[in-house]
Amino acid sequence: MDQTGVAAQTPKSPWGSVAPAAPACSLADVMSEQLAKQLDDENNEFPTLTDPAADLLSDEICDTTSDLMLAQMLQMQFDREFDDQLRREEKKFNGDSKVSVSFENYRMVHPYEDSDSSEDEVDWQDTKHDPYRAEKPHSTPRRGFTGKGKNITTKHDEVVCGRKNTARMDNFAPEVHVGDGLSMDLKLSNQVFNSLKQHCYSEQRRSAKLHEKKEHSTAEQAVDPRTRLLMYKLVNAGVLENINGCISTGKESVVFHANGGSLEEQPVPEEVVLKVFKTTLNEFKNRDRYIKDDYRFKDRFSKLNPRKIIRLWAEKEMHNLARMKKAGIPCPEVVLLRKHILVLTFIGKDHVPAPKLKDVKLNSEDMKNAFYQVLHLMQLLYQECNLVHADFSEYNMLWHEGKVWLIDVSQSVEPTHPHGLEFLFRDCKNVSTFFQKRGVSEAMSVYELFNAVSGLNIPIGSEDEAEFMAEIVALEKRNEDHIQKRGKKTFPVFCENDGPPKQPDSDD
Figure 1 (cartoon, rainbow, N blue to C red):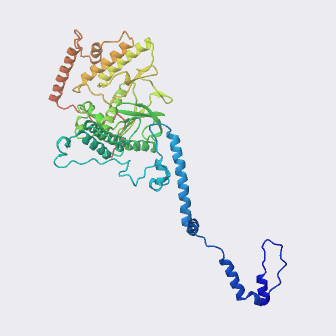
Figure 2: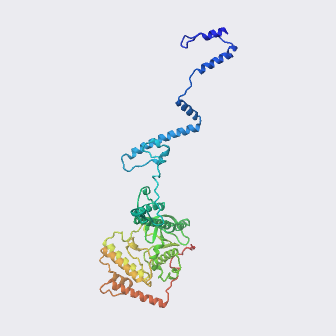
Figure 3: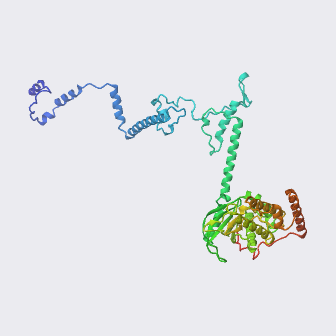
């Protein structure tokens, strides 16, 4: 015990020379209670930390023991750095421009969470209204006005009505872009609002009509699903090898070029065309008089719906072409009729269609020859085929291999038609005008050409068109009365020598 006390009183400097190795102590000395108490007193000599920063540090250290909390803190720090970079890019992009572009939609932190990050930032918690939301206009009470005396405001007030009209723009259809006027104090007058409303209504109806037309009718260089299915069936049946594309469009039909295949009854030419009659129903309002007064189809026209009238129109062209082919008139030959699709022989060579007479460049001798050919064709058509073209012009005549070919005879009628002679006079006028403009001195006047084709020899006199037309109308009237007394002039719908066999049609 005395030796231990003496050793404790001897001071030892920690900066002194290295002390010699302490002698090995026994197990009893290590387990001494006095030594344990001495070591505990030495540890208690250090002062306790009372700095609040130290407490905060200890709290943070304690919080970071959770992995979720640590990840959220890191994500928050990343979002703030991202938003700071976004603000710098926005400021650089806008510069000094009066119209600025906001990048708020790309921010990672909502403004109310980071309101102290920028002095220019608006704290949304302190704002009464959302700046991007239009103010709801104040409703007028049932009595119709607000205020008293000079401050009275009625429901017809210009400012009140303007704001109401602006708010009503939000009720427009989604496809109508009203812009960002809802976020402004915009005041639309009743006249402007009504015009916008009517425009939106018209646009909705127009888009609906366009969609309906695309689904149910043929358009320019396009076909509806039913017509497309018929064309596919022609290819699958081997009648056509392939359909190459559109070569012509008109007010009543679309013409496609195709390569012929094989048919059981007769061979199909190497090159053919598909004449697809348009199924737009509004076109047939102008075509009714060409078919409802035709005695060949009069009985079948009255009880047909518009879609079946289209088939009747295609059938009429087939019969007219058959008559013309039998009389030796150069025209396309009918290969097949399938509902409102007519397969005809191709007038041209190597996929190149023959040019129209209006587009071809002919010398004076060829143009003179063309005029006499047209005159002969009109006489054959009227006298041999008993038909009036009703649309005879340079647009419906092709020049191929030095000859004039006639096309588009779906509207052709017989001379006994109530307006047959009027149609003939119009055809003569078109032909005479065209050749006279091309410098053909032998071209007849419209009156001479009419008499030469019809053989009626109506006196020309002073060549007054009104008097000439009066004579034509009188002849038509006498002809119609004569036919009505004798009864309806009917023709069989199908003759053995009046066209190729038709495909059986199924009712729609």
